[in-house]
Length: 177
Image (cartoon, rainbow, N blue to C red):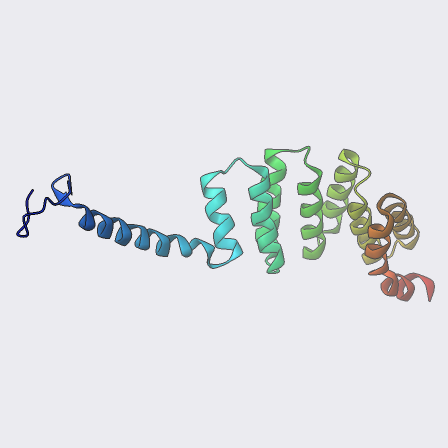
């Protein structure tokens, strides 16, 4: 195609190349704007990920964690149970489920999930700390002490740190009796 200046214009599918660049720019801008809605917060992000990969334990776990962080424990329990259903041997999913159940007030199921998690990975010191806090909640000081000691042995400095976060409560509930 020859323009008024006598120079040949480059065309692509019957359109000048600059028009195609403009159309692509507008299209990609709109798509970026739409995609940014998914990154609005952690829940919308993980809902999108789970919608696209509903059988991935890790993404389901992260969605449960997003609800957990917002204190929406019923939703967190739902998604952690779903994750456990996808892989019953995933101790992290069981620990997360137990913690959400504990904060929801379901002591019996929480205790069961902590024990299942430890059966899968006894060396997970954070599970021992969480179980120790559950024992504190139900006034089983000796069991809490055993779990905290186990966490320190298994976790070293990290275990000591996590246990130290519970020392005031332990002292208040168990030592001052």
